[in-house]
Image (cartoon, rainbow, N blue to C red; front, side, top):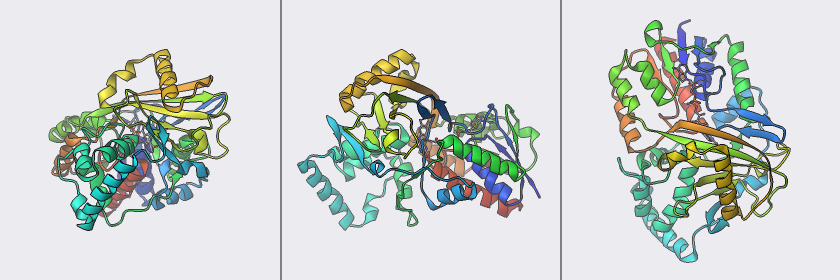
Length: 402
Ligand SMILES: Cc1cc2nc3c(=O)[nH]c(=O)nc-3n(C[C@H](O)[C@H](O)[C@H](O)COP(=O)(O)OP(=O)(O)OC[C@H]3O[C@@H](n4cnc5c(N)ncnc54)[C@H](O)[C@@H]3O)c2cc1C
């Protein structure tokens, strides 16, 4: 059977390697760091676990099937995780006033009467523009903005409506059915993936870098866009320069462990719309999401984005001071801190802006024999979207080389 090389052992690289090995390909992974998982990982503290990046993946059918194949029992999600808050002077489950709700329903309803397709985003249109046109000012700021910020870690002003909303018009869209993670967090998922692919004969070379010129046969590059650009510079210069145009956004996640749980807002978490003089994008109330997992109550605070790149320079004490102020402003809580875990992700995620929209189109027009691109800059930032792409790439390789 033909050999396939995968570069990068993040979630994209590991899952595409799994699907390829299951088809009988001989797979070798080259990973430049000393561990598998990429952005994903879970730190242990005396007070409980702290996720480095994603704390769960969306429970699609494919994700469920992956957990079954890996023999990984998913952590139970609490009923309280269904409650989500958005900040508008206080955390609330519905942030619009009565009048704004009425205006929002009339505006959206009048569009829907004329057919769902009237809501289809145009190419090169920002999400802010799309929102104001279709949902109105208030719903854009207090509903669409926070929801997108929670996924794309940026405000609406630069995000591409086409990239983000167009997939929602696909007829095969699955209904949201909750979340999946391992009992020990996302590191469980990585450990199970690694064990499974090794058992299928996949060779993983850690602390290894490769050059495309040294490789024979099909290659999957499953790294960030920036790393993919460097890897393709010599062999595919045109492709490399498109990849280099993709902008990256930095992010900080801080898990705070408290002596006692706040009980004022029990839910998945709280998203903070822009325009409040608050830096935080969102708060995950971890102990109200996953059952029997935490030793002590903890929250993960996420901040960053292209407009707040300077935050990544803050020292630990400056960050903790800022978060203490914001926690009081948002949740009105002043509890004593037991421990904390800070992850600073410099240029961690692709910025889903109009430049990326153009780059994706340009990438599709380039022929790259034996080379397949994978990662969160292509079909979505979330892990369920990455898993879908792993299946697709494995199918393409299977039908071309199998
Ligand atoms: C704070 C935060 C919270 C998030 N929350 C969620 C969430 O709740 N749900 C969700 O679904 N998603 C979430 N995400 C997004 C999700 O975690 C990422 O999109 C996903 O993990 C990216 O996986 P990847 O394999 O594409 O990339 P990466 O994880 O970046 O992996 C790429 C790998 O390639 C390696 N590499 C780079 N260059 C080379 C080279 N030259 N040679 C060999 N190896 C190389 C890297 O070392 C790395 O291991 C979050 C992200 C962050 C930062």
